[in-house]
Amino acid sequence: MSLLKVPPQVDVLVIGAGFAGLYAHYKLRGIGLTAFGFEAAPDVGGTWYWNRYPGARCDVESLDYSYSFSPELLDDWRWSERFATQPEILRYAEHVADRFDLRRDIAFATRVTACSYDDATATWTIRSDRGETIRCRYLIAAVGGLSLPKPPEIPGLENFAGRWLQTSAWPHEPVDVAGKRVGVIGTGSSGIQVIPILAQQAAHLTVFQRTPNYSVPALNGPVDPAYEAHVRADYTAHHRANRQTKGGVPARINTGVSAMSVTPEERQAQFEKAWGFGTFSLQAVFNDLTTHPKSNAAGAAFVHAKIRKIVKDPATADKLLPKTFPFGTKRLCLDTGYYATFNRDDVTLVDLRASPIERITASGIRTSDADHPLDLIVFATGFDAVTGPLLALGIAGANGVALRDAWADGPQSYLGLMVAGFPNLFTVNGPSSPSVLANMLQTIEHHVDWIADCIAHAEHRGFDRIEARADAQTSWAQEVADMADKTLYTKAESWYMGANVPGKPRVFLMYIGGLDRYVDRVEAIVRDGYAGFAFSRVRVPEERL
Ligand code: N01
Image (cartoon, rainbow, N blue to C red; front, side, top):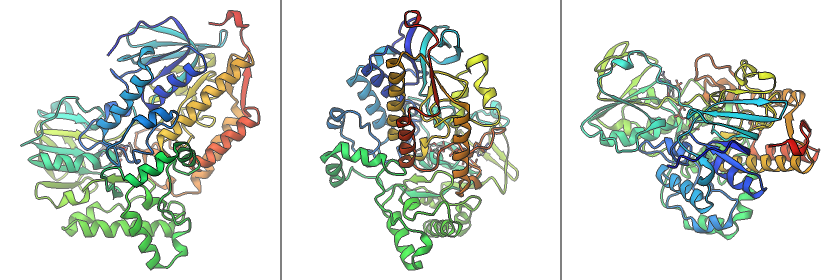
């Protein structure tokens, strides 16, 4: 970890050194701007730096979860598994930082505490928790959508005599759970990955489940040599094709038709094929699984039958059946042996809907009908997603308006890239862009390329102020909301809807029309002279930073 001297001013400040921040540094150097970065962690990697719980791995295939901007990088990196583990992905981020010498402009272990815009000079002033101040002309928030964990919100934790951990801030040193009674709260993607591993190591594992989730077997293994050869044969074509898909990955099992347009036998056969392939295929195998209630019910019934088949005890199986939200409208989980874990004698499933947690006691967790003695509690309880990390930056825009106030009723953003009233601030994967609904490496590269092009466009024309227009933002927000309303996603109490954080406005946080459509829309807006963006000049060039 290096503690860099922070320059007083720079062209662009980049917050975050995950995949988005790293690529932003690379790209900005390419257009000749000076850039500096702050990163809260002691090193690069973002989400893959923090989420180092046992079993953490990506749910997008490694060969697709790769940068595409450098053929040399693609050539010199080999993934070992179909779905890479957290340590391997972190090594990849470190390799990228080394290969392109990206750390030299990043102050690590430094958290941004305030960002304020001065309209007289068209500059941002950024403050850090180390007391540093830096001025910049453009500010890029590359903070990740899932970087602000929800705090453990269960009363009594301070009295617990054992140890507690969060999956999202797992220690670097090994955690010895052998012989321990472990409780996991939460059965989202993180919980579903960590539970099978902890079950193998602990003396006893108790899973505290509030909402059962849909999970499909990841079917991990070594990278498929045939797929690797296909990707390596023409990276450019492969990645370009990925960007022209809904999810930013090849739709390898995809009938392209409604689940209701085929016979029950054909439907079952296609579901089986998708289940046997892994990935998100089960959600993509028919084109209306998250829009058509009957198709959706068919998908749900298929997974329910699988759970009943895998889990031997019918009462436990019944508790694991997701019934409170439509199939696929919370992020589908990819697991390795999750449901089968509940066949173990040393694993107990506690249904918190039947017996809610009352409090944490000195010796464990007390639910309404029992005391569960524990030595270690693991919170896999999720994040204040998408907006939380941006609001945590203490952003105040033109006229001193706080982003927190501007977004009091829910986030407003034009394309997920810029916010009216906050000139020269860019958000990578901001609200109302596809972000987590597509392959993040694709969405990151698309946004960072766009931001760099937009800044270059302004610079070449002598502009120093770029702002999203309020009317464009309003109509984009409406379009995004209308699209979401046509799906079943809005029927789930999910983090996609902000429903997992008490008091958070209920707004569907992503653009659901697909990466392909989004990219086409954004390109058309650029061709139309950056329609919806206002470029202007505040200072003559000699006055600029
Ligand atoms: O978080 P989550 P996550 N008492 O919000 C429960 C990505 N990701 O960290 O549903 C009791 O999904 C909560 O219950 P409920 C991926 O995009 C990817 O698992 O609110 N329970 C839920 O079960 C994912 O979607 C990967 O009723 C409480 C769980 O905690 C996103 O990150 C791996 C509770 C939280 O699930 C977030 O996943 C990991 C409480 N007070 C994560 N509060 C991969 O790439 C919350 N819960 C594979």
